[in-house]
Length: 333
Image 1: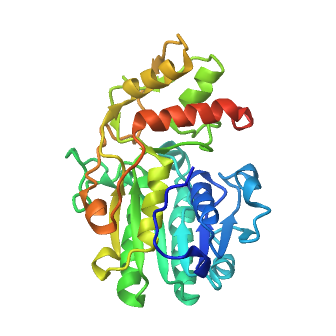
Image 2 (image 1 turned 120 degrees about the horizontal axis):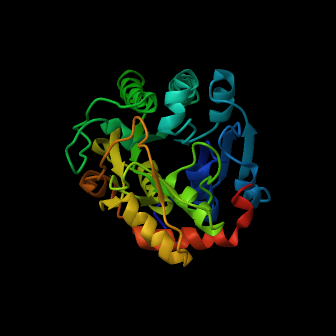
C-alpha cells in the first residue's frame, strides 16, 4: 500500500507527530509518511485501543520515534509536540456504544485530551493541526447526503465529544492562530482494524466471524446504510490536509468518504461472497445511539484539498479480507 503519492513537498524536511499512531488509522498515516521518506515521525500512544504489533514494522526505521503516554496528561502532550511541524491527532476513544456505557472516560480522552493537544501544539509552535473528526456529528439530521454546514443534534456522548472538538479547533484558530483542519471520517475500514472486543467495528467483526465460520450478528434489520471508506482514502485526506496551502482551505472541517451508500446487508453479502461462506446472519436489537442512514457529500474536500477517493467499497473489502486471512495473528488475538 501507499505507492501513490498525495503530497508535493519533500517529506524529509518535515517532522510529524501522530497521536494514536499505534491504532488503526494512525498506523496507516505513519506507514505512508515513512514510506515516502519523512524526516521524523513520532508516535504518541498509550495502547488503550492501539497495539504494539501495529508499530513493529516501523521500529527499525531511523526516522521513527515512539513515545508512550496519555493525551490526558498535558506535560506528555508538550513533550510529544516539541520540534514537531505537523500534528496528526488521531488519538481518541471511539465507539458509540462505549461512550454510552462510559461517558466520563470518553469525555476525558476526547475533549480534555483534545484541548491538551491543542495547547501543546500552540505552545510548541506546530505549523498544522490535522484532527480526526467524525460523521457522528451529523446526529439526528435526516438530510442526505451530509453537507458539512448542516448538522443535527448528537445521538451519543461520542458524537458530542467530536462536535466539541470542532468548536475548540475553531476557537483556537481564532484566538491563537493555529492552523487546523478537521476530517469527518465516514466508517473507515481496512487492514489492522481491531476485530476483537465488545466495541469492534462492523467490517472486521464480520470478517473475523466468517474466517472462523461463526455466525454473523447484525444489529437491527441490516437496512441501515453507511458510506464505507477504505483507510487509504482517509490517509489521502490527512496528507492533503497537512499540505493545504490556501488560507481558505484552513480552519475548516471536511467529509472524508467515497460518496456511496451501502446497507449493512449489502456489505455482508460482499464479504460472504469473498469468503465463500454459506453462514446466514443473525439479527438482533438495533444499537442505541446509531444513526439510520449516512452518505457524505464530498464536493467540499474535492474542491478545497484535491481529494479523490481511489479505492471503492468492493475493492477495499477484497483487500481487507485477504489481508486478515493472511494475517491470522490479528484475528482472535
